[in-house]
Image (cartoon, rainbow, N blue to C red; front, side, top):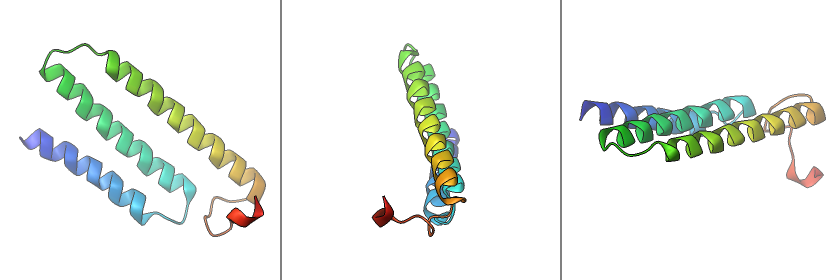
Length: 95
């Protein structure tokens, strides 16, 4: 029961970090990756406790790596285009 509370606390800390860091894209991406890692640990321990196969864990890792690389590519293109990763300097109307 304590482990469930601990993992849910980790996930909600990631949500809090995601909602409070609205200034920089890098901080937002780091909090998203923190939430993904917390979900990965929860799924892994859930599958271990019921002796299921770990195919879903591998699929989850593949999608989380794809999500991370997509976020980094957006960050790099934003820094190349605007010079920083502030959300205030980015305008949707300029695209």
